[in-house]
Image (tube, rainbow, N blue to C red; front, side, top):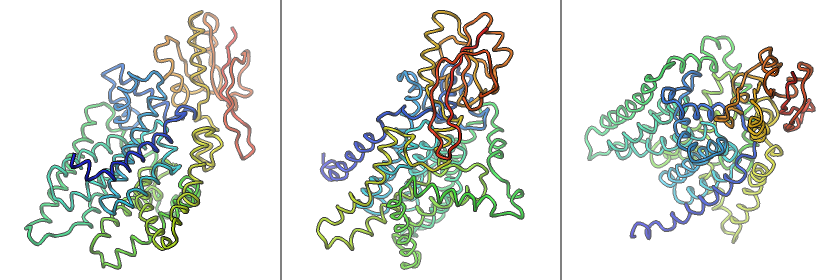
Length: 507
């Protein structure tokens, strides 16, 4: 009771942030069309849950399995598999929110924690990806808590904190291989180390405790050796990353184009008010470090800033494929700095009564809240960056109408045995339909952007359908009857609008 009374203000603030978080994250959670990677992850979780020998199935594609392991029990209690997967990301995002609040509270103060938490709740960048069944939201949760316990460890020098830190870093690696960044960035935390005069060998003790954390994280990583295809973790990563030898003679080749990508993403997904708050927080953090000659309270703040920036710079320098969600794990750390920036903006204005409150409502909130309103009601109308809109709403990677099509096929399968041909062998199709037809006893046959001979032959004895993307199938199939069509978002560049189409293959 004494604890509750002492921290009643913090508890009330956290409760309000939690309510706001779930109000923005939960409505219409399945309204947005399923994305290719979502379909793959959910299908893997279904297969892994059904077959114990396949618990390391994601290794076959060079992916780590923790997100799918966490999804497996949710599939038991939630009937809609897409809802189950996206709800897991919502829970992961809430864990990130708690990490943002407590990290800000520990390194800055309660005012910064309130602003940072609020920014995390409303920032479209986090809202968009917290509502998708992708591993990146879970990686963000692990990352922010790794930073929290790293900074706690360098000040407290306790074995229990070191062990918790090791498990968190291991969890990040088991979620996604870029979780290794936390391992490589761990030495940065030593910037905040302060040698205590009354404690002998404190530096040696710190190094030992960091070694314990690293050892636990590496043990978690090597746990993946229990599954087959462990070697694909490194070989598949090579498909996405330039080696230093490939960049000889053109070191800025991926960096400059990726910089232009970020210049498009951040103003739109963070919105300008939040981005400017982060810039101001960054300036004050760096200024404080030099003002105090790399001593004092600004060093932990510098650790947070570097932990957010360095992974982005490395990704910009080496990644072949670059998308906004690859940077998601750095965004909570930037929002901590942005919360600090807001506290630096408001005091000069405080002499005018109520002006800070007006600024919050008039400048900071409208743009992100309008963006979020569109995400919750008409996501295809949200002002997303061009590439993000194309991938999630316009192209073959976006699956429209899959739940309705699956319900239609299940009903038809009661009348006659159904065979379904799909455009594709892996990804949005057929995995996006597999997740709904998991126990429907419907045969699914993958194909290219045409109806294969195998599917044609099946139509002689079975009720046969073919599903694909209208733009890809145009002019390549015949002797079919259009049954269902679900238009995708209309491209803003004037190109042909695509659609998910279901044909009946005539015998």
